[in-house]
Image (cartoon, rainbow, N blue to C red; front, side, top):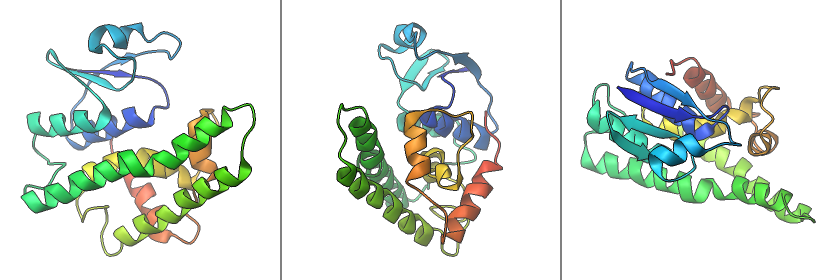
Length: 204
């Protein structure tokens, strides 16, 4: 049995639900409230979702969960079999996690300060918007970020980049408002199509 510890509106949880949906797998959902993280802390020793229990094997952090899911359920794959292509995808995930995420996380931090620096926010927002052109180019002539097949690359990016096409009014998370306000699909038709394409895929 696969058990998924999750919270509403979580971008990192959505990465995992996309991966599960791609593989046609279901999961028992354990919903937590951000005001009480004890259930996830008790099972994983840390407070963040997602956490997945693979028949007693506890894995946390979305990228690690997706990789482990692919090990346990390899078909259909989320990672290329070719070692060079796998290395490229691993490098892309590292870039997304440690470079791409920095500007929106930093904007969120700045907005929590007693005084904010609009110039610094503008610089960070320009990075976010400019990087969308990179994704637009990645989608030239192919349906998904790493080719014609859905992969872990799409799982990693979609829950964050989808805000370039708008935000559900019920989603009041500050981080998601930042993603919405500082990204746009305007002038990026391939990115807009990709967001629609992934949105139509099944999720667990």
